[in-house]
Length: 425
Image 1 (cartoon, rainbow, N blue to C red):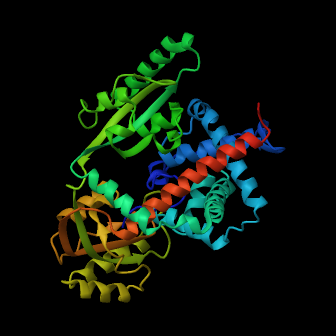
Image 2 (image 1 turned 180 degrees about the vertical axis):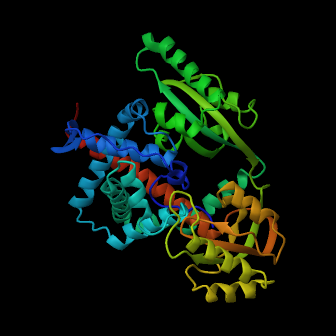
Image 3 (image 1 turned 45 degrees about the vertical axis):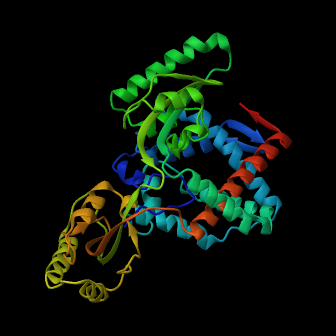
């Protein structure tokens, strides 16, 4: 019902957004892009990861785009090689079923049948092992961090009290949802060149280029490959020049180049909210899913798929409550759970499906929702709106743990970089 979150930073609809874009990479000999403690990263490793990012972000994997991605991808692969070496050094074993579960979540979030992700990647000229290795490293690195932190990862009662006090102090203040593109200036003599380049990038954005795609191609910030998203931040977390600018920006606006230490920032205002005053729409729903005997291919619904759609549509006409949806899902084979659990409407994607759940009358069956591997109908059982106050104790505890893991990740990776022998071609 919502995009499945995996450790892999992929847009949930990325593989569908790039559907139909085949990129059969020409055979070429692999050169050396970098060497990390004697371990070689080939140019083909970089090319495979760049094609994977392009596909997941909905970019056409054309040579000029892939070339612009290569410096960032190479650095990402260097860091992940360091992580993998530490994983092996500590004898951390990543369970294969955990990798399979993450891949399954990506497939489900993109409406792909089992094995569909591998087929989609191979059709686009991307080695499936590229994705598997990325997921393996990300899971293993989290296991390393938890092992290094040990029992100290858990917040104490004092930690919880301090965090609650900090959250309470922010109630009523404004936070800004921002995305950024950072253009570095390593030499003052290159300042004008960097500013002109930043202006060119801004021109692309103001002509309608998607900010996440442009950030992935041009930003030199750590969050570039995640589309430059900073999430919700307070003014105190920003450079003063950026803070002064964002308070004057309407939602959707893109700033002019902002001079900050080390270069130029370009920011987009994606929204604001007042801490403690937000509302949340919570739903309980039921879904009935009927799988096809074979997936839809080339976007064409065949007789076999049409028969399943017709069967579910006709059966749903006699359903008038959520108990009836439970019974119908059982009748259809319980291919997926009828009750996905509580749903926060703001997290539902894609937007078209969010709109269906927002407007569908209670205890009314939706129109058929056709996907590649099956058809479903949904019903909203309850819909309620409440003020979002302080997070629950569990959520606050998880916030503290995530912050500690992130800090340890940065510190450990910095230490590994300093201790290692790294050369780039």
